Length: 303
Image 1: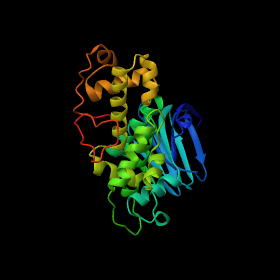
Image 2 (image 1 turned 90 degrees about the horizontal axis):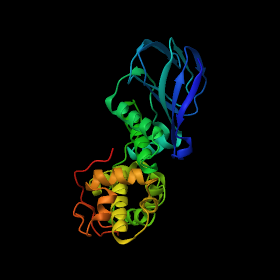
Image 3 (image 1 turned 60 degrees about the vertical axis):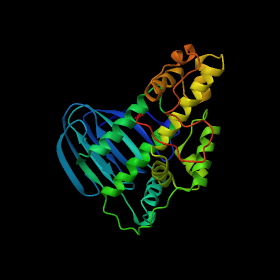
Image 4 (image 1 turned 90 degrees about the vertical axis):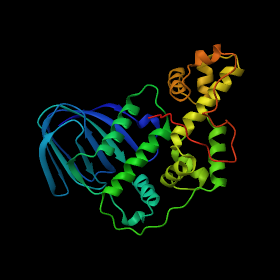
């Protein structure tokens, strides 16, 4: 079997994992001692396939959305009877350890279990989202992708039979919350990372992701997008600069994702904001500067 990488996230600099979309030919492939936990999902037409992992084996007709998990350090082999396309997400040990800490588990005693050819709607949703992020010319950014990676590692640990010592969950203090929000506001033009924000809060990425949502009422990556949209609207109203330049200053890769996010969050387009008289419905948004209270969520969704 030959693997040809169609798209990869390696140049996106995601922390703790990466994703690759592969085209495969019929044949046999053996991989000894995998260097990361691999989660793969079948994307193409049904095909007869077989897989072996550390002595366990499975053979079936693989269909679109079928999943398999090969833990780090495992010996694995595959046999495909036809051409196929797969998305593979490679979770490094550091990410799995961080996810275990977020669950209150001992990272040294927690492990993701192998699973050959199964279905799980939540994992499938995360894999599709990561696939779209890899393929997108206008990605939503590292915070979004790394949130998906952390969610994937966390869900896999929950599915697995782990032997760990649980520690009680903490709450995100107002001091840490304000610190994270202020850092986001001051670095909107940067490609913010979940790991970077976790360092600001002095928490593990998994803890920050969970506790931020509990404190604020929406996921961290959605909060970042809303801050960027609010900044962009303020800038469009106050500065006579090209929209492409304002998009970069707001943290969007190009003008296109800025317009897309602005429509979803505010129901407006950049050109409509520029044509306005300055009366823009900001009630749904937190202010750009750090507030003393947690932000109230709205009903808009950024996936």
